[in-house]
Length: 354
Ligand code: BGC
Image (tube, rainbow, N blue to C red):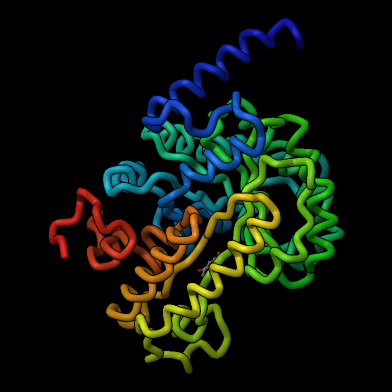
């Protein structure tokens, strides 16, 4: 309805201005920028990101982790994080028949988090996560996947540009790279119909492995896309004792020392070369070591991965805030200082500076 457009535009500009002032950088991440410029500047706002994992990406909030508390947002800002990645399980809150309507109550829940984070000057990644049926039967699920994104995208069309859409977490199993490329060819235009100037975040198959970037088909003429990958190498160290990984019990006791750092450097250098040939910003969307690893090794690995990401110009997101990899104790609302120090060495909330 054209009659409403000027009002909507004004509102959108106002929201953007609020976000920019809150972010403290008048040149960061704006709808006025050209697409490639926007992707680069939005990526810079993801410099130090924290995953709000195991909160909204299960069938019910609180099922496999803490309820998301407003304090988590406030504490993350105070600690020095610049953004939150918000994994959301939309498919569990939507109808199974067309038009696959998403629950209004759940949308309102997500809105509350997005608004609170934006008001605190944090960028937000709305990440479609744990979409199990898309991994099992991607072709049968494709229409629903696109319909979910149409709804989410339309709902957030006026959100500030610091709210980014991550199209799907960790494509895996039956969702091969070739099927994922086909799915992208349909879902990106569906999102772009309502969000022509929204920065998208997209990774490859095999659980967003760095290797899959080489065969990821991103539309060449859409420059408003940040490429993403996840890093949990070596798995026997980061996933030792992880109940959801078969054989991980046998990895308990695996240590990691800074002597292994050159592997991380080489792995990231390869991603950087890919990024340069493609002309895309890169975001390390998940990395972390499970809490059953010894603390000294976890701190050494987390420090090394975080430093190498920064040295290669990748924004990063630690997996995760307050669950089994967590940097925050969700009950005491206190930081696990050695781990926080490995992520944010100059954080104002650290009591003991090393
Ligand atoms: C998954 C989590 C898991 C983590 C580490 C994430 O992508 O969603 O459930 O804990 O990876 O394995």
